[in-house]
Length: 253
Image 1: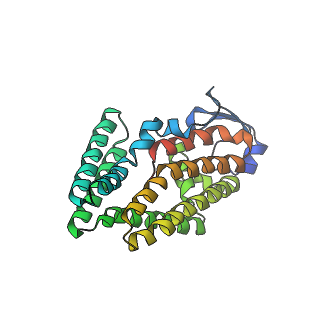
Image 2: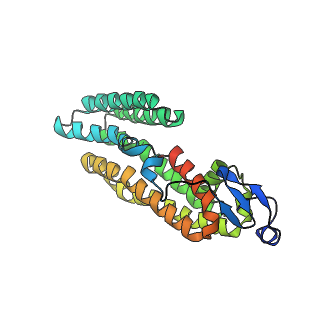
Image 3: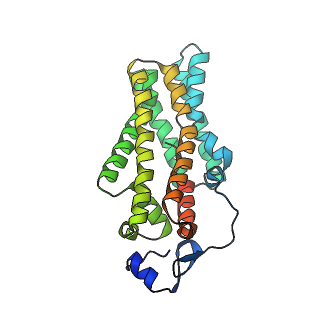
C-alpha cells in the first residue's frame, strides 16, 4: 500500500511501482518489504526491559519508602526524585528520545512538589490521574469524531500525514484500536481515583505500578493484534514499521 491522493479503487485498477513508507516498494497492491525478523517485539521497540522497568520505578520507590519508613513523606519524595534524576541520566546515556528523558523527570518532579506542598502523600499520584483523564477524554472524543489518535500518530510516523483517513480499511482499524486506549485510561481512573479519594496511599501506589507499564504493554500488544487483523496481509508491511516507530517513541504514562 502506498497512501496517495488516489482512492484505493484506482490503485487496484492501475498497478504501478512506487516507493512506500518505511522503505517499502509498492507494485499494484503488493508490498515488498526489506527482510526483517519475523514477529514484533514491543519490548525491543520500547528500548528493552530496562526501558519498560524504569518507567515505573520512581513511583514504586516512593510507595516502598513510604511504607517501610513509617509514612515519612519527605524521605519518600527525596528517594523518588533521586531515582527519577538517576533514570534521566541513564536515559541520556542510552540516547533515548529527549522528550522521554525530560517528560519522565518533570513528571516525577511535579508530583513531588505537589505532594510536598499539600503534605498529603496521595497527592504524589494526583498529576497522573489528571493525565489519564486528559488522555482518555482525548482518545474518546477523537474516536467519536472519526479521527482516532492511533491513526494520527501512525500516520505522522509513517510520513502519510492524514491521507490514511481516506482509506476505510485503515480508518476502521485505527478506530478499533482507539477504543482499546479509551478502555485503558478509563480502567486506570476507575481503579485509582477511589483509592486516591480514600487516602489509600499504599494501595494506590501498587495500583499505579501494576497499571503502568504492564498494562501498557498488554494494550500495545492488543493494539498490534487489532490493527493487523483489520488490514489485508499484503498491506501490513509498511504499517507494521510505522506502529513500531510509535511504540518506540511513546511509553506508558
